[in-house]
Length: 234
Image (cartoon, rainbow, N blue to C red; front, side, top):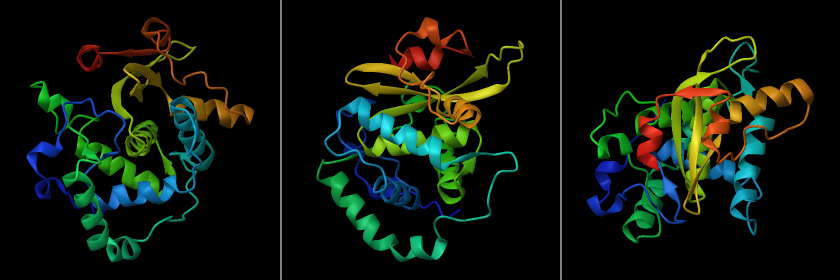
């Protein structure tokens, strides 16, 4: 994994306080941000409403990625050499975007609120590492899926956060699980792209059972987590 962080190159004023308007939100790792831009070229979002843009990204992830267990086809979708070749030009482009105020760098909000951030699933480092892996291989677990959704939605101007908790299965089991909480037009919505992917694998269609849910009580029927972080975001 290359992961060259750009944060040291950017002015302190480039950071927002978690509310970015609709400006593109970059992660600050040139390789991850570059791959995200390349993937977004494949996803039709121009001229669509905010919900339609998010749905297009959601659909792409579900139809182009596979679950972690024994499903990787061995194909790398980017090469380290190709990414290294665009390093200087991409960093120059990104710095220009940030310095001009046309884009922002995503912030570790846990640190902003006095919470430990480095080992959090929603930290810049974690999001970068897991998004990198799944963009390279199109294969991953729930955290890979959530990280990829976070980065792609960020580039479209949506502040997406990763929540760490448990999923409540019908048989009563509760495996560790990760999902997203995204800010759209002043309202937070829950999304669980990995579980909708599981439904897609079973039925052959996307049923959006876990897409853009505003009702937290409804979300709690299948998800359990420490509400401290999500409450702070709201």
